[in-house]
Length: 430
Ligand SMILES: [Zn+2]
Image (cartoon, rainbow, N blue to C red; front, side, top):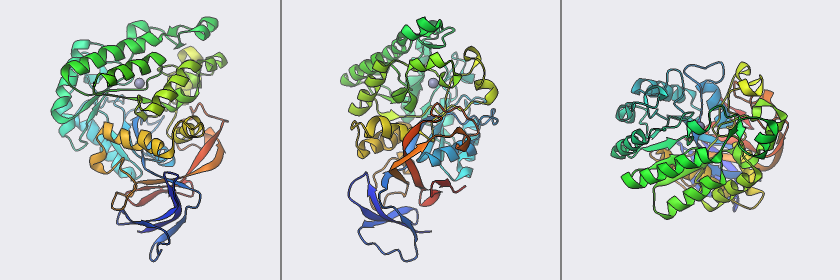
């Protein structure tokens, strides 16, 4: 099947036609012939390379009541993604070649996005014994990113061994930076709001202490570290320091940490409970600045679907986490593009190019530029559209979006994975 995208603006720049044939961008230029191709009217639409998410919870196997690979993949395609990294905290945990291959195969079957499993660093996420990292790397899933996300690899000797181990195959350890001894019973950010609400706080230092330790370890052993969902001003400063020193560290920020603040805890609506917690307006400003100047490499959703029983209860009992895949690009447009902090090339870099390189997915054709000969992983976005988020309309099996009722800019009109349409007219094709 061939497609002619008529009048699209790659990276929001000059209008052109793009001809997709045999899974690649076959031609680019004005006035291309549509002979034999399906026409897509793309006037006023920005064309970007397919987005890549470094941090998705798909919940399968184990919690298919909250999400499946299929419903998560549909959310991702509708959000403009062509690839997602599936976190390891499933049931069973993705800590063996067998489980990561199962998740990878389920992803292939969706034909909506490529699902790249993240392997657990430790057996059962238990934090005491290294998992079979090499076997997962050698499996059909070709795992390159490892994380105990949800838990921190707190034992420094074990973290060092993991960093050393993955060097052999160009892997990376993605750390959920949380000193658990400092966050026992924590419900929200530690600060003025937590004091007023009487909720136990999660201090910024619990994140920053682990990042400081890990960048030092990474520099010492000459390995590669990725820091998940950074949320504080101090974390950005530590990353800037480490990068200046030449330490091979990358980092991600979530859409919700770019937009929302800890004031929302005052609603006691558990939809705003997340780990790490929403922080202050000052932290939000530092995260936006860090993403703009490249200290923070990528936007990653931390899409965390939860069933109604786990989320629609009192704040203290609710599980932390929120949906992200379908609104991530809109939040980035709102916080970074419309404010002039990033142009569209910057968005492509932070949501496609860099995450693909960090996760090792360039080998599969993700994260490249929109040029003739490149794999046709292309998303068409209408930046002028504004949509009120309705949880009932989301593709996820769960409803825990923090953006319900908000009017957000940008609409994914079409999405192509290796030349196959996964979204057309804003509707998932599978
Ligand atoms: Zn996490």
